[in-house]
Image 1 (tube, helix red, strand yellow):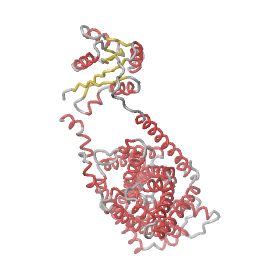
Image 2 (image 1 turned 30 degrees about the vertical axis):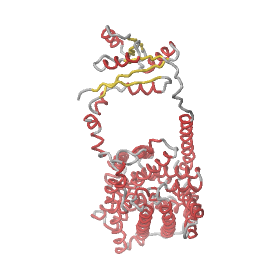
Image 3 (image 1 turned 180 degrees about the vertical axis):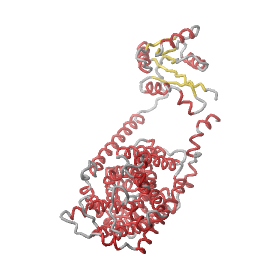
Image 4 (image 1 turned 60 degrees about the vertical axis):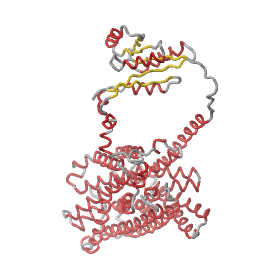
Length: 621
């Protein structure tokens, strides 16, 4: 028992003590906690959605101020439609799963897998974009260190990895702990943005800024630019679906509390997005590569060296980093549902010590880090890929709700069908607009085509995993046990692997002889001198020692070849390979020794007709 406590002491220090399954109800979230967990992704878009709209026009030499407010209003209307549509989903599917569960149940398995693939892609992008954008906000606050020649900018990828690991660590500690830890930064961002909007509205733009603001026609490619700008601004809607995916983590009644949270999220998001967009219009702000738009607005409203400005940048950095919080809450949960249904590895369905899907959390961290590294820590490279999958999920989810409502025909179903139907039609149209206008980014290889190409590949992976599990199930459940029938006789052949002589070998030799009096000891002579010493030390042992030469210093191959020779000597023999294993007193001691035993067990486990037995020898502390 003492060894077990020692072995896991570091894990307990980092993650905390294990929680019994009966404590799952204590990990449920109140509305104010859930709002912090599930709103961070959507609220973070306030920091860059308006900027992405203006970047579209700036790329062709226009400011876009003449249409900025109109595009913002259209996005707000779309947001309201999506919020009310998803409110119905949370009430109808309190078990969670969002678009995947709704689409699979009502539109078929294939539609559900498309929604699941789109969700997983979006959550990986959410995590990578959020962390990258948060680090960019940090460098914007310190321009002399943050611009391309500065220290912070040059270390941005490592900063991204650092924050990514911190978020992973907090979620491994448990959903409730992460919600409490991340609530303060989320609400701080809401408050400071509210102060920014009110102060900017009271202060108003200076006459110089008003004169500098150019109102121009959109130009020859106006229709396409408008659609492209609208599609870029629709990143403001990413994260709205998170509440319906994570409904089971709410306190009872889960569906009702999730619906309330979703409405609160919609009200806050509409207020902040409209306020920031209006300030960008009033102050005539244009984005640039060295400083974010919200940073420019903060300098104009609060003053560049004021406490208010630095508070805004700290809050923006925090909310952008915490936007990954939504992905870390929902990606493992969607992964667990897919794993339970046999479309992803079963390990993703397992809850860890802290009642979270730890394997899913670690997988998301790895994929996000890979994406950040590939994009060189630039959110602008990843944002064009962003939100395409989300609107596909919106469309599938609301289409599935239409089928669900028509089938049940509960009270008020006709009105609800209209809401979901309008939501499906509008989000489907936006999806097509985004897929076309963001298909390829000008002067860059990235674009929506990457997401659209990844979807069928991920679905093929789902199907492949499903076929494997189905094949395994047929093999393990197809036969019948006949314990009453006489079993065929077989001969035991024991092979004891001997790396060197030590006190722990005594039990290993006794065990080998107990199952096979003619057991043989086997040593692979990677070091000829060590082999000679072993032969001398072995003299007098009541067991033959076989020395296997290994001129290429391979450990596994000579053993596998010798097993084949032994297997050919007799028919109906059962070969047992005995592997002595040193068990270290502390976990970090394993880092100081070769782990050849693990490699051997893996290689032997792939061989048919072989039984592998470990004989542990526990070392003293």
